[in-house]
Amino acid sequence: MKINEQLLERQIEAWLQEDIGFGDVTSLSTVSENLEGIGILYAKQSGVIAGLTVAERVFSFVDAELVFSPKVAEGAFVERGAVIAQVEGRVRSVLGGERLALNLLQRLSGIATMTSRYVEKVRRVSEKVRIVDTRKTTPGLRMLEKYAVTIGGGHNHRLGLFDAVMIKDNHIKAAGGIHEAISHARAAIPHTMRVEVEVETLAQLEEAIAAKPDIIMLDNMDTKTMTEAVRRVAGRMIVEASGGVNLDTVEEIAATGVDVISVGSLTHSVTALDISLDLNERKR
Image (cartoon, rainbow, N blue to C red; front, side):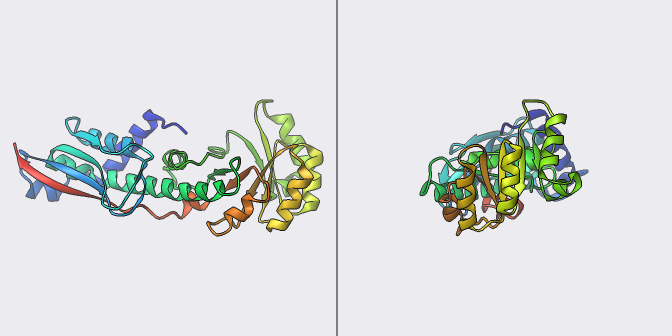
């Protein structure tokens, strides 16, 4: 997942307008216009850092003369207390960008950290299984949240409704069956686009195999049924597992032989990594 720089710039402008509005009244009334300083960003928890370039863009948008210097690499695992970056320049500007930069950096690092834990778990069982995200993202943050998943070692599922066909239970009901849904989709989409279908039972699985989608999603199956489903597919399609996935179950799911495990909680309910900024001030 690559960051669309033009989209990010528009979003940062809107987010800063939301936070700063007509001005940071606290800093304007308490901090000298000429005061300069260095803001030190440090991790208050151990984890994987993601979003340093995003934080840099926030500060540069606030004040082009601010100098942002990362102290660790994007995707690095850091221990609690580690300095991850510093930003130097006008104190008013540093404080103006602080909250937005930290909000983004904390959330993206939280996602990258959690993703890395899932990846580490499945690697104990299989080198081929991919951990992927879902569309259960925060509105307005999908691009960055999916980017953070890749920084944590995961992969992206479809980016939106526009880039792949994913036939779920309601589509199947509306189309009149799995075969009908897949047939309609094949007739309507470019030959370069993949078709995925969700199944909940082995009977649905057989219907799906006969219709020849590119990917079959096993939705909320127990691992015994999942193992049998993988055996029946026999490598003819990519098999994805979804539903009931957490850090306690993911190894057992990976051991069934599936190719992909999708985890909605990577983005919809992840806990932000605690990161703070301390100011070391100095006069101009």
